[in-house]
Length: 198
Image (cartoon, rainbow, N blue to C red):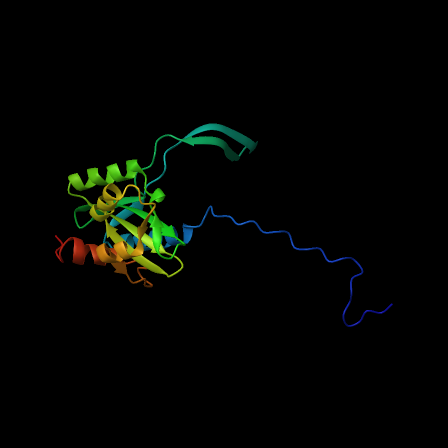
């Protein structure tokens, strides 16, 4: 039998394997944008801001090859505080970054009590503290000062999410760009420092 030009296979077509959704790296694109922004600020001498490593305790390591150690069991030593910290123009900066696919709110379960306490401590020492919030479905990014997050957290403890309206009312929209991708220092300079830098 000649099957030219379209060869037809006598075998049954197999259904493609079902794809499972993996949410492990859901916020990675936003995180990469922040890291690229921080690299830009560092390379241009504008600020020194880094992602904080999460402290872990290694329990067990496998050595399948001499040069390829693999951590197979570990746990968090302590709850992490916020994602980023550093210095801008002599000011200490500390912030958390959150991304959501929800359109109208950000879940409050994303903010833990120890993070709120840490933000309160940073503010007590006159540091600059805030949250970068990214709504992926709308491609909208906001800087919400920590005082407004803390106020909402304490006043509306029963509330499961913070409405986008509250964020728009109390925060500052950041227009995404190319270099830097998330120019949050512009918001800090203009709104949190009142246009002044040292």
